[in-house]
Length: 535
Image (cartoon, rainbow, N blue to C red):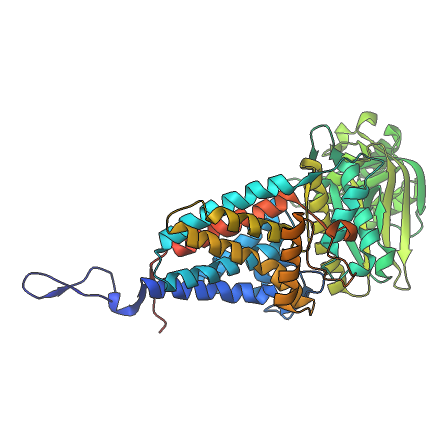
C-alpha cells in the first residue's frame, strides 16, 4: 500500500488496516481482470456449437451435473474471483432475458477482453477502447437489423419455428431426436401463446421428467400431469367427464386453535365422540357428492377413515398435491381453488374430459393424467430418459427451445447461424472503422476481430482447419455479398446456412453483442482493486 506522509515526515493511515490489504492499480489491475475474464471464457469455449463438448460438475454434496448449457455450467462452478462472477452474471442475464445463447455471450466477452489487452499493450487508454467498443457494437446491432429476415407463421404452419428450435437443440446432448423435441416445444408454446398480444406465459408449460423409457418416448400432454396416484388402491383408475373439486382444506375434523384437552371417562362418551367424528366426515364427503364432484384433489392429507369413506361413497380422491400443481390444474380445468368446505358450489368445480392413472415399468410408479380440459391453456411436456442426469439435461434443453419459440412469437426476425451473422457483422464493423479518425478506430477493428472468435470456436470444436475455414467463408461472403455463409460444422458439404436450415433469433444475437460489450466496458474501467489479503 502507498503510505502518505504529513509535512513532518510522519506516516499517517488513509485506509483502515492498510497493511493487511493487497492492492493492484493501473495497468496491472486491468491485466489481472482481463486474465480472469478470459479464463472463464476459455472454459466455455469448447462447449460451443453442435460439436461442442459437455462439462461434468460435481456439487459439494456429491450430486453430478452433466451439461452443455453455459449458464448452468457457470452457476454450478462456484467461482471466487469478482471478475469471474461478472461473467457468471453475464450469462445469467442472457439466460433470463433470451434463454438461449448463454455460451456464445461469454465466448464473445472473452474475445473482446483478449483484444482489449493487445490495445492496452499498444498504450491506448482503456476509456478510448471502451468508447470504440461502444461505437462498434452499435454498428454491429444495426447491421444485424439489416441482414435479418422476417418469416410468417401461424398455428397451422409452424415449420420455421421448428427449424429455429432445432438449431438450438442441435448443440445439446439430445440432438439425435431434435426434430421431435423441437415440434413438442413449438406445439407447447403455441398452445399457451396469446398471438394477438404476442405474449407467452412459460409458467403455463410444466416440464415433468421420469426415469425409464427412452428419449423418443417424450410426449406433450394437453393437460396436466401430477406425480401422484389415487389415495385408495381400489378407487377407479379412469374417470371420464370428470368434475373436479380442488380443495386446500384438510379432510379431517376441525381442531381448535387453542390448546385443549378432552377428558373421556366412560365408554359412552368415547362412542359419542367417535360418532361425532364419523358424522363430520360423512357430511364432508356428502357435501362433495351433493355439489356434483366426481374427483377430489386435496392439497393436504386425509386419514384412513376419510379415505375409507371416500372409497365407499365412490368418490375418487388424490391427496398431497403441491400448490403450484393445484394452480395449474385450476387454470387448465377452469375450476376454483376452494379453501373451505362451506364455500364449495357447483360453479367452482373444474371440468376435464378424461382423468386417468398410468403406471410405468415394473416399479409400479403411477402418475395422474388430467386431459381434455375445459381450458387447454396449460400443457405438460413429459420427458423420459435413461438416467436422472439425462432427464435434467433434457429439461434444460427443452427450456432453451421453449424460450426460442417464445422470442420468435414476440419478434419474427431471424438471422443465420453457424457464425454467419458474426462474420457479416465483423465485415461491417471493419468497414465502418475507416470512418472514424481518432484512436477509437483501433478499438473498432479489434471489435471486428473479436466477432470472428465465435466462428473460430465453432470451427475449432468441429475439428476443421481454423484459419483456412474462416478465411474461405469470409471471402465467400465478401465476393457474393450474401450474409448467409457460415461454418459447416456438421460436414454437410455446403456453407449456405439457408440450405442447412440453421437459424437464430435476431433479438438473441443483438442481446449477446450488447451484453458482452457492456460487461467488457465495465471491466476495462476498473483501474484499482483493493482486497483483503489472504492470511
